[in-house]
Image (cartoon, rainbow, N blue to C red; front, side, top):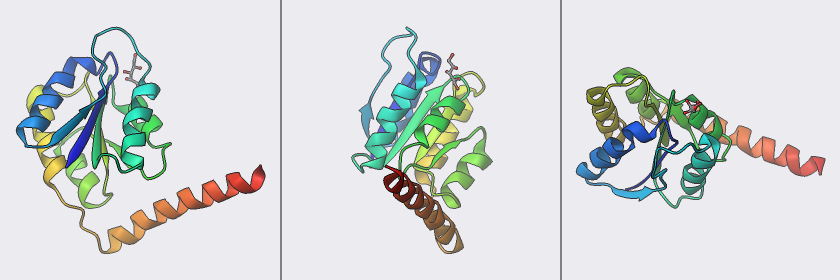
Length: 155
Ligand code: RB5
């Protein structure tokens, strides 16, 4: 599996750890930065990672910013992306089992190192349960199709 990793200047504080953990677990990384603590705008980073996921060029993405929220809001604008702002083991696990989340959004400000490591392990290992959850996730994809069709019809 190929994992794209992106952080803004606030996420920079945990980005090296995220890269290390993902590598240690044996995944290939596409590292989109940011590569210094200089301020960057989180939507730019989120869009880069989300587009890689949406186009299927990577299997999943991990994003980090101050709260995890801005990255998540921006990433979810891209079709095919199901980004989840997780903050503990339970939300991390459920984002995979029920929502088939393909982008994990982490808060550099609020999460400790041990928890971050554990969350990444859980998130990369837990399979999607499918079944009734697949029907619901398919409905999310259907919303994307409808929105796209409405947009086309309005131009
Ligand atoms: C950047 O100051 C901060 O707003 C960003 O890292 C993130 O927390 C946004 O949701």
